[in-house]
Length: 192
Image 1: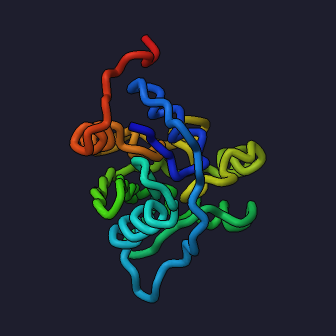
Image 2: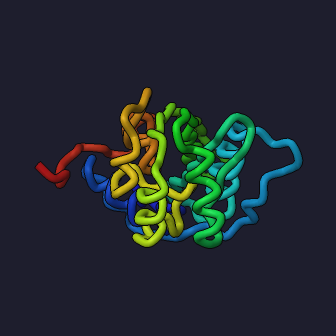
Image 3: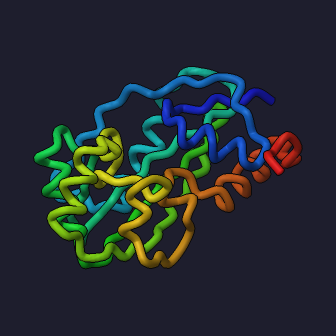
């Protein structure tokens, strides 16, 4: 069974490699990721994951995902510039927020979909920490403007839920979905 990863995220490829999964092909889906009016974060993440899976034309098994950072009802996407990254980080500073990943698996007309949520606590950021982080450029291309697996991890005293979800792909649920779809998951080739 061939597996197509409908994402160009190197983090998702690295996470899959942790469980011995190497996609046969990487084919990022090109869809409009604009939230609908009044769309809540969880349904938004679910919709994008499914739309990405549906956008890839293939009879192979397709895995796609979308990770959303949410403060209340507000969806924080990938910041377009350092100014927006600063706004996001100041909003997250000193409070809890949710990271929701929608995961979709499709083969033919059959689609499996899950949404996994993790609560992340951010420390209160000093002006010096914020400035240094913005200069690092780590915020680029990251939902909410941070990466827990990088420098941003220094700002997170605790999480409640899946760490790999915050990185971009909840491994437990993804592995279970792959097994349920008949993908031969052996964990062989995973790093020791």
